[in-house]
Image 1 (cartoon, rainbow, N blue to C red):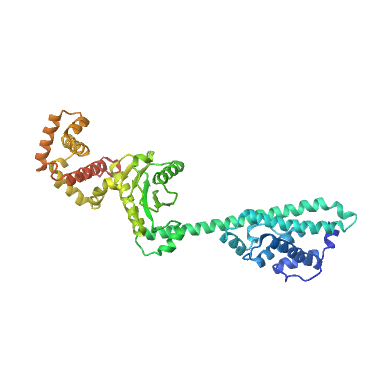
Image 2: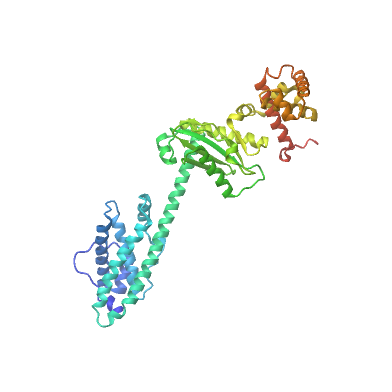
Length: 426
Protein backbone atom coordinates (compact mmCIF):
# COMPACT_ATOMS: atom_id res chain seq x y z
CA UNK A 1 0.00 0.00 0.00
CA UNK A 2 2.89 2.35 0.77
CA UNK A 3 4.31 1.82 -2.74
CA UNK A 4 0.92 2.62 -4.31
CA UNK A 5 0.60 5.83 -2.32
CA UNK A 6 4.19 6.79 -3.16
CA UNK A 7 3.34 6.75 -6.86
CA UNK A 8 0.44 9.18 -6.52
CA UNK A 9 0.83 12.54 -8.25
CA UNK A 10 -1.16 14.78 -10.56
CA UNK A 11 -0.26 16.70 -13.70
CA UNK A 12 -2.12 19.76 -14.93
CA UNK A 13 -3.77 22.86 -13.50
CA UNK A 14 -5.16 22.52 -9.97
CA UNK A 15 -7.49 24.56 -7.84
CA UNK A 16 -5.66 26.52 -5.15
CA UNK A 17 -5.30 24.43 -2.01
CA UNK A 18 -8.55 24.66 -0.07
CA UNK A 19 -7.50 22.55 2.91
CA UNK A 20 -6.80 24.25 6.24
CA UNK A 21 -3.08 24.96 6.55
CA UNK A 22 -2.43 22.40 9.31
CA UNK A 23 -4.16 19.64 7.31
CA UNK A 24 -2.24 20.52 4.12
CA UNK A 25 1.03 20.45 6.07
CA UNK A 26 0.08 17.13 7.68
CA UNK A 27 -0.62 15.60 4.27
CA UNK A 28 2.65 16.87 2.72
CA UNK A 29 4.83 15.98 5.70
CA UNK A 30 3.52 12.41 5.93
CA UNK A 31 2.82 11.53 2.29
CA UNK A 32 4.75 14.09 0.23
CA UNK A 33 3.92 16.82 -2.27
CA UNK A 34 2.86 14.28 -4.89
CA UNK A 35 0.08 12.93 -2.66
CA UNK A 36 -1.07 16.50 -1.91
CA UNK A 37 -1.24 17.26 -5.64
CA UNK A 38 -3.06 13.97 -6.24
CA UNK A 39 -5.71 14.84 -3.62
CA UNK A 40 -6.34 18.19 -5.28
CA UNK A 41 -6.55 16.63 -8.74
CA UNK A 42 -8.73 13.70 -7.69
CA UNK A 43 -11.13 16.07 -5.97
CA UNK A 44 -11.41 18.21 -9.11
CA UNK A 45 -12.09 15.12 -11.19
CA UNK A 46 -14.85 13.96 -8.84
CA UNK A 47 -16.43 17.44 -8.67
CA UNK A 48 -16.54 17.68 -12.45
CA UNK A 49 -18.36 14.36 -12.59
CA UNK A 50 -20.69 15.49 -9.80
CA UNK A 51 -21.55 18.76 -11.54
CA UNK A 52 -22.54 16.82 -14.64
CA UNK A 53 -24.95 14.76 -12.53
CA UNK A 54 -26.74 17.29 -10.33
CA UNK A 55 -26.73 20.61 -12.29
CA UNK A 56 -27.11 22.70 -9.12
CA UNK A 57 -26.22 26.29 -9.97
CA UNK A 58 -26.70 27.35 -6.33
CA UNK A 59 -24.44 24.71 -4.81
CA UNK A 60 -21.56 26.21 -2.74
CA UNK A 61 -18.83 24.52 -4.74
CA UNK A 62 -15.85 26.09 -2.92
CA UNK A 63 -17.19 24.78 0.38
CA UNK A 64 -17.91 21.37 -1.16
CA UNK A 65 -14.37 21.32 -2.58
CA UNK A 66 -12.88 21.99 0.87
CA UNK A 67 -15.01 19.23 2.38
CA UNK A 68 -14.09 16.77 -0.37
CA UNK A 69 -10.35 17.44 0.07
CA UNK A 70 -10.77 16.97 3.80
CA UNK A 71 -12.41 13.57 3.30
CA UNK A 72 -9.92 12.39 0.67
CA UNK A 73 -7.01 13.48 2.87
CA UNK A 74 -8.47 11.38 5.69
CA UNK A 75 -8.82 8.48 3.25
CA UNK A 76 -5.17 8.62 2.15
CA UNK A 77 -3.87 8.97 5.70
CA UNK A 78 -5.85 5.94 6.72
CA UNK A 79 -4.54 3.94 3.75
CA UNK A 80 -1.01 4.90 4.79
CA UNK A 81 -1.63 3.61 8.31
CA UNK A 82 -1.75 7.09 9.84
CA UNK A 83 -4.35 8.21 12.39
CA UNK A 84 -6.34 10.01 9.72
CA UNK A 85 -8.71 12.90 10.40
CA UNK A 86 -11.67 12.59 12.78
CA UNK A 87 -15.01 12.02 11.05
CA UNK A 88 -17.19 14.16 13.29
CA UNK A 89 -19.76 16.92 12.94
CA UNK A 90 -17.30 19.64 13.99
CA UNK A 91 -15.24 18.90 10.86
CA UNK A 92 -18.26 19.65 8.63
CA UNK A 93 -18.36 23.26 7.48
CA UNK A 94 -21.35 24.96 9.12
CA UNK A 95 -22.08 26.89 5.93
CA UNK A 96 -22.42 23.63 4.03
CA UNK A 97 -24.90 22.18 6.52
CA UNK A 98 -26.85 25.46 6.54
CA UNK A 99 -27.05 25.47 2.72
CA UNK A 100 -28.30 21.87 2.64
CA UNK A 101 -30.98 22.54 5.25
CA UNK A 102 -31.99 25.97 3.93
CA UNK A 103 -32.63 24.55 0.46
CA UNK A 104 -34.19 21.35 1.85
CA UNK A 105 -31.86 19.09 -0.13
CA UNK A 106 -32.85 15.45 0.53
CA UNK A 107 -30.39 13.47 2.62
CA UNK A 108 -30.43 10.78 -0.06
CA UNK A 109 -29.02 13.32 -2.55
CA UNK A 110 -26.15 14.14 -0.18
CA UNK A 111 -25.36 10.46 0.34
CA UNK A 112 -25.53 9.87 -3.41
CA UNK A 113 -23.10 12.73 -4.07
CA UNK A 114 -20.59 11.41 -1.53
CA UNK A 115 -20.85 7.90 -2.97
CA UNK A 116 -20.26 9.35 -6.43
CA UNK A 117 -17.03 10.98 -5.24
CA UNK A 118 -16.03 7.76 -3.50
CA UNK A 119 -16.46 5.89 -6.79
CA UNK A 120 -14.23 8.37 -8.65
CA UNK A 121 -11.52 8.25 -5.99
CA UNK A 122 -11.57 4.48 -5.75
CA UNK A 123 -11.28 4.16 -9.52
CA UNK A 124 -8.22 6.42 -9.53
CA UNK A 125 -6.65 4.51 -6.63
CA UNK A 126 -7.26 1.15 -8.31
CA UNK A 127 -5.61 2.48 -11.49
CA UNK A 128 -2.63 3.53 -9.40
CA UNK A 129 -2.51 0.10 -7.71
CA UNK A 130 -2.67 -1.75 -11.03
CA UNK A 131 0.35 0.29 -12.19
CA UNK A 132 2.44 -1.09 -9.32
CA UNK A 133 3.13 -4.62 -10.51
CA UNK A 134 2.90 -7.21 -9.19
CA UNK A 135 2.31 -6.14 -5.56
CA UNK A 136 -0.31 -3.50 -6.38
CA UNK A 137 -2.98 -5.97 -7.49
CA UNK A 138 -2.96 -7.67 -4.10
CA UNK A 139 -3.80 -4.50 -2.15
CA UNK A 140 -6.95 -3.66 -4.16
CA UNK A 141 -9.37 -5.49 -1.78
CA UNK A 142 -7.88 -3.76 1.27
CA UNK A 143 -7.88 -0.48 -0.61
CA UNK A 144 -11.59 -0.80 -1.48
CA UNK A 145 -12.49 -1.75 2.10
CA UNK A 146 -10.55 1.14 3.61
CA UNK A 147 -11.92 3.76 1.21
CA UNK A 148 -15.50 2.56 1.73
CA UNK A 149 -15.10 2.47 5.51
CA UNK A 150 -13.69 5.98 5.60
CA UNK A 151 -16.51 7.30 3.42
CA UNK A 152 -19.08 5.50 5.59
CA UNK A 153 -17.74 7.34 8.61
CA UNK A 154 -17.89 10.70 6.83
CA UNK A 155 -21.41 10.08 5.54
CA UNK A 156 -22.40 9.41 9.14
CA UNK A 157 -20.71 12.63 10.30
CA UNK A 158 -22.34 14.64 7.49
CA UNK A 159 -25.74 13.15 8.34
CA UNK A 160 -25.32 14.06 12.01
CA UNK A 161 -24.30 17.61 11.09
CA UNK A 162 -27.34 18.01 8.83
CA UNK A 163 -29.67 16.57 11.48
CA UNK A 164 -28.18 18.93 14.10
CA UNK A 165 -28.69 21.88 11.77
CA UNK A 166 -32.27 20.85 11.04
CA UNK A 167 -32.92 20.57 14.77
CA UNK A 168 -31.42 24.00 15.36
CA UNK A 169 -33.52 25.53 12.58
CA UNK A 170 -36.63 23.74 13.82
CA UNK A 171 -36.15 24.99 17.37
CA UNK A 172 -35.45 28.51 16.14
CA UNK A 173 -38.58 28.38 14.00
CA UNK A 174 -40.60 27.04 16.92
CA UNK A 175 -39.49 30.02 18.98
CA UNK A 176 -40.60 32.36 16.20
CA UNK A 177 -43.91 30.51 15.84
CA UNK A 178 -44.62 30.75 19.58
CA UNK A 179 -43.69 34.42 19.56
CA UNK A 180 -46.05 35.09 16.63
CA UNK A 181 -48.92 33.24 18.35
CA UNK A 182 -48.34 35.10 21.60
CA UNK A 183 -48.33 38.43 19.77
CA UNK A 184 -51.61 37.55 18.05
CA UNK A 185 -53.44 36.42 21.19
CA UNK A 186 -52.28 39.46 23.17
CA UNK A 187 -53.39 41.82 20.39
CA UNK A 188 -49.89 43.12 19.69
CA UNK A 189 -49.25 44.56 16.21
CA UNK A 190 -48.13 41.86 13.76
CA UNK A 191 -47.24 41.67 10.09
CA UNK A 192 -50.14 39.55 8.87
CA UNK A 193 -48.40 38.44 5.68
CA UNK A 194 -45.22 37.42 7.53
CA UNK A 195 -47.24 35.67 10.25
CA UNK A 196 -49.21 33.79 7.60
CA UNK A 197 -45.99 32.45 6.07
CA UNK A 198 -44.50 31.57 9.44
CA UNK A 199 -47.59 29.86 10.88
CA UNK A 200 -48.44 28.22 7.54
CA UNK A 201 -52.11 29.09 7.87
CA UNK A 202 -54.01 31.88 6.08
CA UNK A 203 -54.68 34.39 8.85
CA UNK A 204 -57.28 36.04 6.62
CA UNK A 205 -59.36 32.82 6.77
CA UNK A 206 -61.80 31.50 9.36
CA UNK A 207 -60.42 30.22 12.67
CA UNK A 208 -62.01 27.94 15.25
CA UNK A 209 -60.26 27.64 18.59
CA UNK A 210 -60.21 24.84 21.10
CA UNK A 211 -58.55 24.76 24.52
CA UNK A 212 -57.74 21.44 26.18
CA UNK A 213 -56.78 21.03 29.81
CA UNK A 214 -56.71 18.68 32.76
CA UNK A 215 -58.16 19.53 36.21
CA UNK A 216 -55.60 20.08 38.99
CA UNK A 217 -54.09 16.80 40.10
CA UNK A 218 -55.04 15.01 36.88
CA UNK A 219 -52.69 13.41 34.39
CA UNK A 220 -53.10 12.06 30.88
CA UNK A 221 -50.92 10.14 28.43
CA UNK A 222 -49.66 12.05 25.41
CA UNK A 223 -51.23 9.56 22.97
CA UNK A 224 -54.66 10.17 24.52
CA UNK A 225 -54.23 13.92 24.15
CA UNK A 226 -53.00 13.56 20.57
CA UNK A 227 -56.03 11.43 19.76
CA UNK A 228 -58.36 14.19 20.97
CA UNK A 229 -56.44 16.78 18.94
CA UNK A 230 -56.83 14.63 15.83
CA UNK A 231 -60.57 14.17 16.43
CA UNK A 232 -61.06 17.92 16.77
CA UNK A 233 -59.37 18.64 13.44
CA UNK A 234 -61.30 15.86 11.75
CA UNK A 235 -64.61 17.05 13.23
CA UNK A 236 -64.06 20.56 11.87
CA UNK A 237 -62.96 19.14 8.53
CA UNK A 238 -59.61 20.81 7.90
CA UNK A 239 -55.98 19.69 8.02
CA UNK A 240 -54.79 23.27 8.57
CA UNK A 241 -54.40 23.14 12.33
CA UNK A 242 -52.07 25.07 14.60
CA UNK A 243 -51.11 23.75 18.05
CA UNK A 244 -49.74 25.72 20.98
CA UNK A 245 -48.86 24.19 24.35
CA UNK A 246 -48.31 26.16 27.56
CA UNK A 247 -46.07 25.49 30.54
CA UNK A 248 -49.25 25.07 32.61
CA UNK A 249 -50.20 21.96 30.64
CA UNK A 250 -52.90 23.48 28.43
CA UNK A 251 -53.10 22.84 24.69
CA UNK A 252 -54.60 25.45 22.35
CA UNK A 253 -55.70 24.54 18.84
CA UNK A 254 -56.76 26.61 15.86
CA UNK A 255 -58.35 24.98 12.83
CA UNK A 256 -58.38 27.29 9.81
CA UNK A 257 -60.82 27.01 6.91
CA UNK A 258 -61.68 29.06 3.83
CA UNK A 259 -65.37 29.25 4.71
CA UNK A 260 -67.12 29.57 8.05
CA UNK A 261 -66.64 26.22 9.84
CA UNK A 262 -69.21 24.41 11.94
CA UNK A 263 -68.06 24.10 15.53
CA UNK A 264 -68.31 20.49 16.70
CA UNK A 265 -70.25 19.59 19.80
CA UNK A 266 -68.34 18.40 22.83
CA UNK A 267 -70.15 15.07 22.50
CA UNK A 268 -68.74 14.67 18.98
CA UNK A 269 -65.18 14.67 20.34
CA UNK A 270 -65.65 11.78 22.79
CA UNK A 271 -63.45 13.59 25.31
CA UNK A 272 -61.72 11.02 27.56
CA UNK A 273 -61.56 11.74 31.28
CA UNK A 274 -59.96 13.63 32.89
CA UNK A 275 -59.50 15.91 29.85
CA UNK A 276 -61.74 18.93 29.41
CA UNK A 277 -62.24 21.08 26.33
CA UNK A 278 -63.44 24.59 25.73
CA UNK A 279 -64.58 25.29 22.17
CA UNK A 280 -64.75 28.85 20.89
CA UNK A 281 -66.93 30.25 18.14
CA UNK A 282 -65.57 30.63 14.58
CA UNK A 283 -64.21 34.06 13.65
CA UNK A 284 -62.37 35.51 10.69
CA UNK A 285 -59.01 37.22 10.25
CA UNK A 286 -56.19 38.01 12.67
CA UNK A 287 -58.64 39.49 15.17
CA UNK A 288 -60.75 36.36 14.87
CA UNK A 289 -57.67 34.23 15.60
CA UNK A 290 -57.39 35.97 18.98
CA UNK A 291 -61.12 36.10 19.67
CA UNK A 292 -61.74 32.37 19.25
CA UNK A 293 -58.68 31.71 21.44
CA UNK A 294 -60.04 33.89 24.24
CA UNK A 295 -63.49 32.31 23.95
CA UNK A 296 -62.08 28.79 24.06
CA UNK A 297 -59.86 29.66 27.03
CA UNK A 298 -62.72 31.24 28.99
CA UNK A 299 -64.97 28.29 28.18
CA UNK A 300 -62.39 25.81 29.43
CA UNK A 301 -61.98 27.82 32.63
CA UNK A 302 -65.73 27.81 33.23
CA UNK A 303 -66.06 24.11 32.39
CA UNK A 304 -63.31 23.29 34.87
CA UNK A 305 -65.04 25.37 37.53
CA UNK A 306 -68.38 23.67 36.93
CA UNK A 307 -66.83 20.24 36.73
CA UNK A 308 -68.66 19.55 33.47
CA UNK A 309 -67.77 16.20 32.00
CA UNK A 310 -66.02 16.67 28.69
CA UNK A 311 -66.20 20.45 28.59
CA UNK A 312 -68.37 23.08 26.95
CA UNK A 313 -68.85 25.25 23.89
CA UNK A 314 -68.71 29.03 24.07
CA UNK A 315 -72.17 29.46 22.59
CA UNK A 316 -73.70 27.56 25.48
CA UNK A 317 -71.97 29.43 28.30
CA UNK A 318 -71.17 32.86 26.88
CA UNK A 319 -73.41 34.76 29.29
CA UNK A 320 -72.03 32.96 32.32
CA UNK A 321 -68.48 33.64 31.11
CA UNK A 322 -69.13 37.35 30.84
CA UNK A 323 -70.83 37.51 34.23
CA UNK A 324 -68.17 35.49 36.03
CA UNK A 325 -65.23 37.68 35.00
CA UNK A 326 -65.69 39.53 38.30
CA UNK A 327 -66.52 36.87 40.88
CA UNK A 328 -67.50 39.24 43.66
CA UNK A 329 -70.03 41.04 41.48
CA UNK A 330 -71.17 37.73 40.05
CA UNK A 331 -72.03 36.53 43.58
CA UNK A 332 -73.94 39.74 44.16
CA UNK A 333 -75.80 39.12 40.91
CA UNK A 334 -76.77 35.60 42.05
CA UNK A 335 -78.06 36.92 45.37
CA UNK A 336 -80.01 39.67 43.61
CA UNK A 337 -81.65 37.38 41.08
CA UNK A 338 -82.28 34.25 43.13
CA UNK A 339 -82.81 35.85 46.54
CA UNK A 340 -83.43 33.10 49.10
CA UNK A 341 -82.81 30.46 46.41
CA UNK A 342 -79.14 31.45 46.54
CA UNK A 343 -78.86 29.63 49.88
CA UNK A 344 -77.20 26.25 50.26
CA UNK A 345 -79.97 24.26 51.97
CA UNK A 346 -81.37 21.00 50.49
CA UNK A 347 -84.69 22.75 49.86
CA UNK A 348 -83.16 25.61 47.86
CA UNK A 349 -80.96 23.13 45.95
CA UNK A 350 -84.12 21.19 44.99
CA UNK A 351 -85.89 24.34 43.86
CA UNK A 352 -82.88 25.46 41.77
CA UNK A 353 -82.72 22.04 40.13
CA UNK A 354 -86.41 22.35 39.32
CA UNK A 355 -85.81 25.71 37.69
CA UNK A 356 -82.89 24.40 35.64
CA UNK A 357 -84.92 21.46 34.38
CA UNK A 358 -87.84 23.75 33.57
CA UNK A 359 -85.57 25.98 31.47
CA UNK A 360 -83.87 22.96 29.85
CA UNK A 361 -87.26 21.74 28.63
CA UNK A 362 -88.10 25.18 27.20
CA UNK A 363 -90.45 25.98 30.07
CA UNK A 364 -92.89 23.20 29.18
CA UNK A 365 -94.67 21.64 32.14
CA UNK A 366 -95.17 18.07 30.87
CA UNK A 367 -91.57 17.37 29.74
CA UNK A 368 -90.15 19.01 32.88
CA UNK A 369 -92.44 17.01 35.16
CA UNK A 370 -91.51 13.79 33.39
CA UNK A 371 -87.79 14.47 33.74
CA UNK A 372 -88.19 15.36 37.42
CA UNK A 373 -90.45 12.35 38.07
CA UNK A 374 -93.15 14.66 39.41
CA UNK A 375 -96.87 14.95 38.84
CA UNK A 376 -97.61 18.01 36.71
CA UNK A 377 -99.68 19.57 39.54
CA UNK A 378 -96.78 19.07 41.94
CA UNK A 379 -94.46 20.84 39.51
CA UNK A 380 -96.95 23.69 39.05
CA UNK A 381 -97.19 24.16 42.82
CA UNK A 382 -93.41 24.13 43.17
CA UNK A 383 -93.03 26.71 40.39
CA UNK A 384 -95.54 28.94 42.14
CA UNK A 385 -93.48 28.79 45.35
CA UNK A 386 -90.35 29.60 43.33
CA UNK A 387 -92.03 32.61 41.71
CA UNK A 388 -93.08 33.83 45.14
CA UNK A 389 -89.43 33.75 46.26
CA UNK A 390 -88.17 35.42 43.09
CA UNK A 391 -90.85 38.10 43.23
CA UNK A 392 -91.75 37.70 39.55
CA UNK A 393 -92.86 35.14 37.00
CA UNK A 394 -90.20 32.65 35.86
CA UNK A 395 -90.56 33.74 32.24
CA UNK A 396 -90.19 37.45 33.02
CA UNK A 397 -86.43 37.41 33.63
CA UNK A 398 -85.53 34.05 32.15
CA UNK A 399 -82.10 35.06 30.81
CA UNK A 400 -81.02 36.61 34.11
CA UNK A 401 -82.43 33.74 36.13
CA UNK A 402 -80.73 31.09 34.01
CA UNK A 403 -77.40 32.93 34.20
CA UNK A 404 -77.77 33.22 37.98
CA UNK A 405 -78.47 29.48 38.20
CA UNK A 406 -75.31 28.67 36.22
CA UNK A 407 -73.23 30.99 38.39
CA UNK A 408 -74.78 29.58 41.57
CA UNK A 409 -73.86 26.07 40.50
CA UNK A 410 -70.35 27.25 39.65
CA UNK A 411 -69.82 28.76 43.08
CA UNK A 412 -71.34 25.79 44.91
CA UNK A 413 -69.06 23.35 43.07
CA UNK A 414 -66.04 25.48 43.79
CA UNK A 415 -66.86 25.37 47.50
CA UNK A 416 -67.25 21.59 47.27
CA UNK A 417 -63.74 21.30 45.81
CA UNK A 418 -61.27 20.60 48.67
CA UNK A 419 -58.67 22.64 46.81
CA UNK A 420 -60.79 25.77 47.22
CA UNK A 421 -61.90 25.30 50.84
CA UNK A 422 -61.09 28.19 53.09
CA UNK A 423 -60.14 28.02 56.75
CA UNK A 424 -62.83 29.98 58.61
CA UNK A 425 -61.69 28.86 62.06
CA UNK A 426 -59.91 32.11 62.69
